[in-house]
Image (cartoon, rainbow, N blue to C red; front, side, top):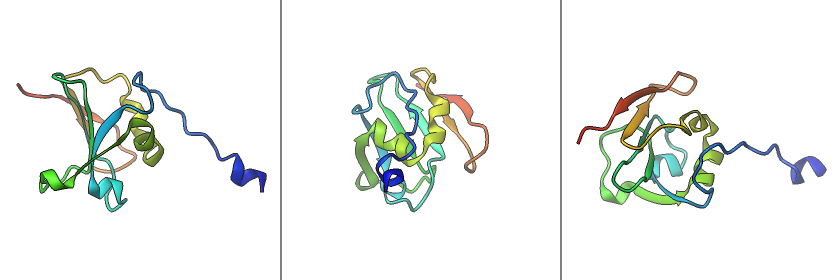
Length: 104
């Protein structure tokens, strides 16, 4: 019983507060696909955590908290120091993130 009450707490490494809003695609939110593409926007400091597919529309984008996103996939903690204006991608979970500069 106590094990259920005291789950292993997932470490949160980002400087942004856990309740900071971020963008995810509904594929990630509904756990249909993994987070494979991340950006940290330089214009408004927003974060996007997406599945990496190019078939998204505005209807696919959802807003949740950074803390919820890390709870869904703690491998994104590896990107906590990624500066604004950059992104990173992987082909599958467990790979090392490949950074890239967001073009202007």
